[in-house]
Length: 100
Image 1 (cartoon, rainbow, N blue to C red):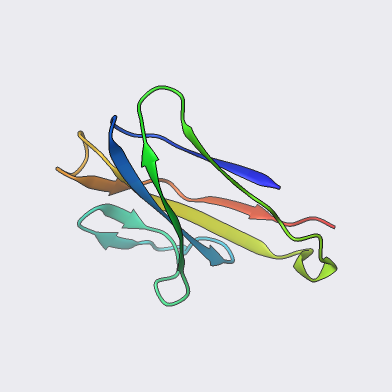
Image 2 (image 1 turned 180 degrees about the vertical axis):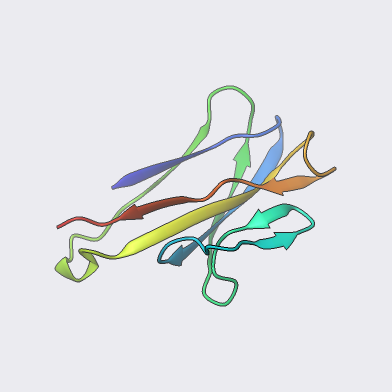
């Protein structure tokens, strides 16, 4: 299993996205900052409330299936922000490869 940590201003929200593979070498520049995932292949992984201080944890299971070995996944969130854009900003992406 894995655990993603999200935080932001109290009462804020985050939308978590994922895609297969590495982030794009040249991100898409948007109103909310750089979006690093492939714009034709990303999916919504879920929504979460966020808060300052301790992060909100989003655990998820990685299937115990050999077919996933060697696959790479990237995640990025759009989260509430009081300092970047007036309402939200993209986080830095994270990437991991499933090991056998």
